[in-house]
Length: 211
Image 1: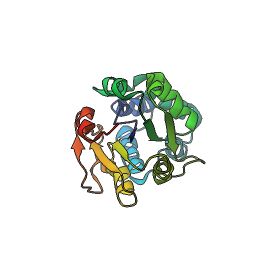
Image 2 (image 1 turned 90 degrees about the vertical axis):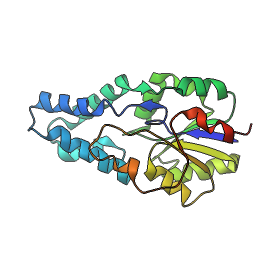
Image 3 (image 1 turned 60 degrees about the vertical axis):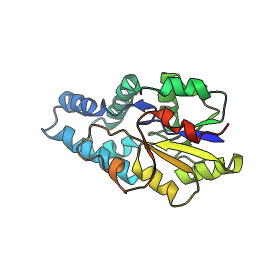
């Protein structure tokens, strides 16, 4: 059996800091009131449509020093990500088994790997598989790769959008980790509606694990 897990919102909280990141950008650039709320709405739409490269949004919306802002965004988000309760205990328990981290790249693969290594969670996984890359263009590509290794797969993710894609195409045991970031809309976490087991504590999947 393969146990696969998403990163942001499943193992770590890197979302709570985002409103503060945009507020700091607004203050430093002396941008107009409402900028932070507007960028949070863009974050919502990006996550819903699967556009995870923040640099694309920032370069389109901000013409002055976009590269500096993108670097600042990921620096602050990396430094303030928090490991969610139960994560370490669960990974410690199953670290010698087929644990895979399945997650989107950020603006680049290097940024995401740097963020993961900052938490020291990388040591628990047999492999880290990033989609949105040349190797795996979509999350479906990742799981088609994993199915060739073992057809019995568990996957945990906090976003409805990701789970919906998988459920419609592949036979995988899916679980929604209950987590909702501090955004106005949270579109990717509410829609599309999907019928999969919901968990609050990651250990709730143990009854489905066969090792």
